[in-house]
Image (cartoon, rainbow, N blue to C red; front, side, top):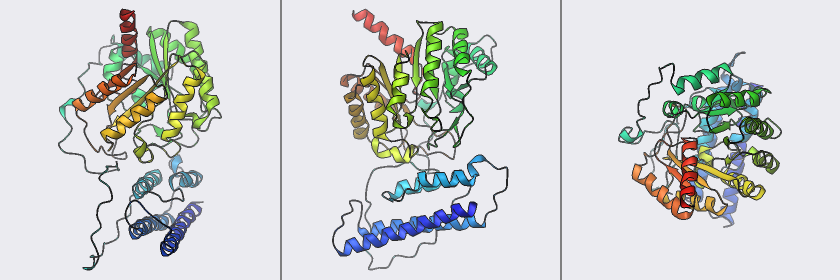
Length: 440
């Protein structure tokens, strides 16, 4: 089976050479125009990727993968991931490099050494940079200066047995519930939990997707959802005594509806116990299923949240190939179509190479489909296996996005270096409602 996966990689090399041949033929007939660089540059990039993929295939053929290793090394998983990470269309050398590193991470292998570069011939012309835009990569140099002071999280004492942090932690453990705060290594866990706000993560702790920024565990077939989880979650929230709860989940592409009915059942049980409870659900795109969106939108929740994560240009560098910008916009737009008065919310990470123009363009896209709330926060890589930060965004830039967003007409904008999608969600929501009452 391992050899079968290696053969698939060799097939990818063959497809690369077919692509090169077609480019050469089309060039001869003057039927091709490539915006980024010349035809020769494009061919060189394809051949370079083919060379690396070939080396990877050879290394797989020579490796002995023992029984009992991680599930992600299962040959069936490799074959499935191959289709997702190596589409036949090699349209972007940067994206190809990210896909290659993701595959190597999945296999637990080190990147092959780059082949020695030949000295350029004197008559060869210098190749000008094709773009000044930045892209995130794995193990790239960290931007200078070192991590700035505004990214330091204030100390929170979590040792007291009577602290809200301790109570939430013990309660979640007792009921075998997961939180995105822990699974995604959120830096604000002490501050949020000590303030009495926690985020419950439904549908288990293992995701079927592998986004390059996320620290949650991944597998193609996670364990089935806990049928009693909706009741457990409702019981936990009731014991906390909170009036605003955020529920999120991993992506569950293995489930027919993506987990929408599981969410809906949880919302209904919680609202049945406490009708005044405000419920926010931060969910996946459900693979673009409008039916799944409708199931959750009509469950009685108060805020429907789905994150676009980054600007359009960086989607394929940051998110799993099964997620994309337009599919996320379609999801948020359909919520408003089904239930116009239901709040929609999304979040964008900054510091991944986006430009101010791209961020503001994304804000326009969001306001055009009726999104009510947007949040901005600094991307911080959770480990060396994830994308490196391209830029430390300054607090004044976050303040600028907040001002622009409010002028555009969002109900409220939460923007700051340490802001995350669920960061103090209840406090900001209730603050907005309080301001509206004062205006009335």
